[in-house]
Image: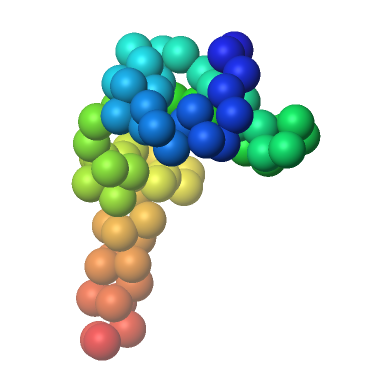
Length: 77
């Protein structure tokens, strides 16, 4: 982890962000006291979670959606 003052960060923000993209971490100081850590975002998958495929939920060997459809057919809904 590299330590930079707020002034240094402001003057070299683009270079700091480029380094963060490469995996570097920075601690930003203001008046000698740490105020922030600038770290890369850790992503395991580039696809947003709401777009990922999921396994269907099953109960007693039948999927929940099939169970709901079967129940609707039985009760005429």
